[in-house]
Image 1 (cartoon, rainbow, N blue to C red):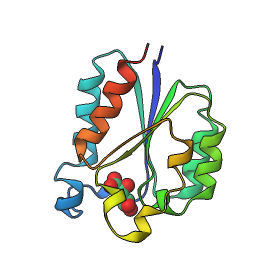
Image 2: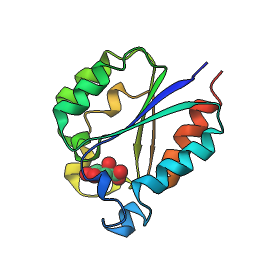
Image 3: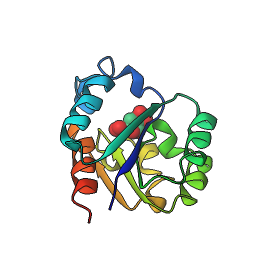
Image 4: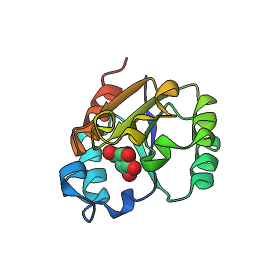
Length: 142
Ligand code: DQA
């Protein structure tokens, strides 16, 4: 049963609300976190972490290997980070990759994805609903 979940957001996701709305919607990260808490309905224990630094995200994953699940939107590091891939590879729980935008149908450079192969599930292209789908997915897991 999934209980303790770490939600990681990578670079520039602290700026949601100011980023192009056609891709990322109009909510702030705080708005999205509050929606996730509501959706979790006390069935999941959520911890939120945001960083603009690759190394800090790697360290946070290393410190969280005992948790049940990680929901991660690595932002631009999705397309560049072998280091985040390698850190996630050590995690034995569920890894849910999330994107607000439809990364597979944008610029070619966003089709390169270092995270997909270590994720157990991906939700993308549904703006804030991608995160809420991730919560539902983990909540329904027996
Ligand atoms: C993103 C997509 C990435 O390509 C981009 O660099 C981001 C956000 C998304 O949520 O759609 O910062 O991960």
